Amino acid sequence: MFAVNYDKDNNCLNVVVKGFWKPEDVALLASEVGSKANAARGIRQDFDACVESLEFPVQAMDVANLLTAIMQGAMALTTGRAAVVVGSQLNKLQAERTLVHERVRMFLSSGEAREWLAAPAD
View: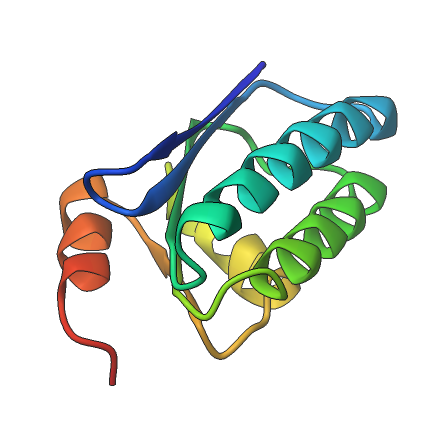
């Protein structure tokens, strides 16, 4: 359903999400992201995040809204950027509508997302 890990070498919190979720699934993710983001912050306060959601279909609005809260909380813990990799244009549209933040961008490929994170910030 999900995996979260911090890559010290690339200073990136990596999150993988899969499947169709219920609101209670989001609470488990929130706990894990919070724990790993706080640990990353203890190492460097400018860590980036990359969310891979290639196998994560468009979610119900209640779930999408809860995911937005996770993004907002995680972005408050870093000065870095976050890339969200989605599997379809429809997923991209939902993510762009719900995950609004000046340091968050949506991508249709992991390569483009990683390139953007590696480039100097605008």
